[in-house]
Length: 387
Image 1 (cartoon, rainbow, N blue to C red):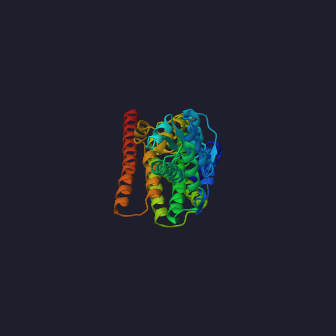
Image 2: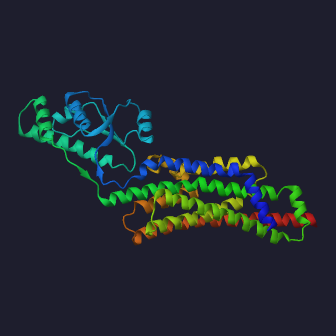
Image 3: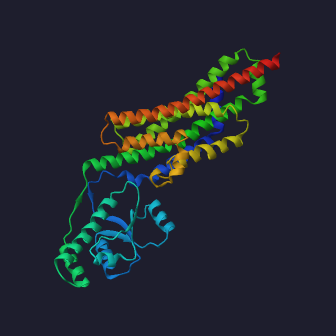
């Protein structure tokens, strides 16, 4: 019990650094609170932005039609403003009406328009419907009657004056809830990972200090038994904090215990093995506190950015995702998103999930084998010194 008490005291002394990942995770989850209300069945308006480069009578008419049916915000015509507006959820849909819009439409062709949307937003389908409906109606009247542009616009607006109510399918709401759950559980790749790794690191540093190491060498407990008790203590800490994180995530997302939740928890359990094996291996090389922060900031946080945790993978460059695929974080997030997006948990779904979980287990096995090799090397060096 003395060893376990010592581990507990070490964790208490370093609670500031250990709670950093917890605090960041809790803060980010609250940013998702607005998305957790995906169980609504009615959609009244879409959030959009319109940039009119054509500045013609037709383009203004289309913009006016959209403004009557959506919440339209003003936006500067540059890529940074567009990306920021989508990232910070100021809008869901950005329509850029290019020059030549009116001339192509007058020629009986539907002009190409630049559209940028936020991932997983229903506004895209709604806005596309509005735009296509307006353009097709205008072209139908243009073919049927010989009228001036202003008359065609009035006739088109008159025929589309009626408004309807969009009702979302219940399956859409369920999918949105699963997507929110997936994003929240993805945060374990940072909060839980950094908490487990930091815990292993501070415990190893404490027991590997020269004065503590020499004192333990004189104790009646064998090195194997001491090492085993330290490992059990660190594993107990990891299991406890993992359960605390999972309980919080389930409560926050209001997830019931169903098949989707079961697969999510299975993915988390496999990722837990990866986190423990990684922490066990890497902490055997750490000799100072600065290295702990370095690993947390470079590898763990870096893999979260490249793996699609902090930034959605759907808007990230392909080369960044390829880099992220060499980290376990990428596969953990990919499995969570696969679970959320699957309407049916059929054989194909199970095959894809099993493939991702096997890759995670390969990472865990690699870290475990490397750790055994390091321990064997240290044992050989220790034996040579004694001889």
